Length: 108
Image (cartoon, rainbow, N blue to C red; front, side, top):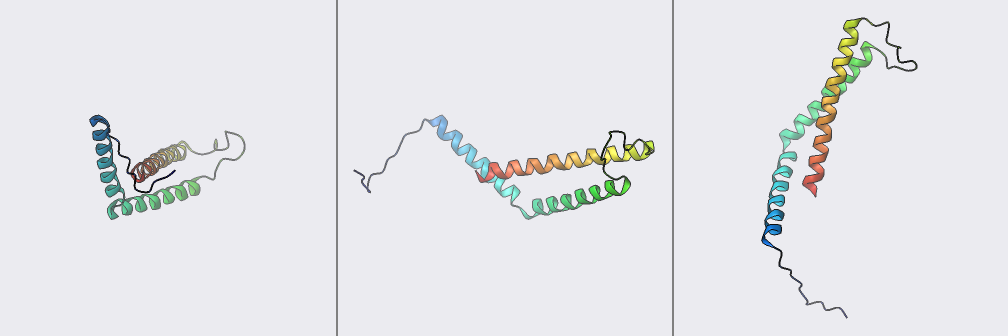
């Protein structure tokens, strides 16, 4: 039989309560940070920069289809530029993954 007026409370140990409060405060600070307009603006700018890097890399050399040595006819400078653009794109991808992880943590 269910009663509507029953209030169940539990006493949590102090360590668990402090940990819960600490995590809640951290989440609140992270939520404030990721929802700030400057953070969103920086993320939008980085998305546009990443898009321009992808376009630049595609204009320098078309994507590889087929054998691994498809870009063997490129000059060493072009190969080095493509490698640097790949590294920058990887850094942007890591930033975006960190942002998604922080958003998931902050939203709970």
